[in-house]
Length: 98
Image (cartoon, rainbow, N blue to C red; front, side, top):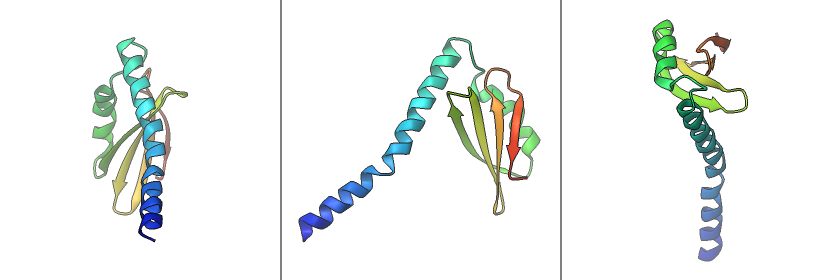
């Protein structure tokens, strides 16, 4: 029984790692694109967007390498808001949760 529970616990630890691996891959692609001069540095994009989001707590970014866009996540109370930003230009290309 102990072996069975240990194997289930070990398998459960592997499940959350899968999305993290995909995110790490996109972050690596973002760094590569930034070094090549194809996208703006994340700090520059955050410097443009965060001042517009007063009253919201910034939770962090996610990079979509296919769209070459950042999704910045914010929270105010129980309201979750996403701001999608073109990584090449820094232009806001979408908002959700408002």
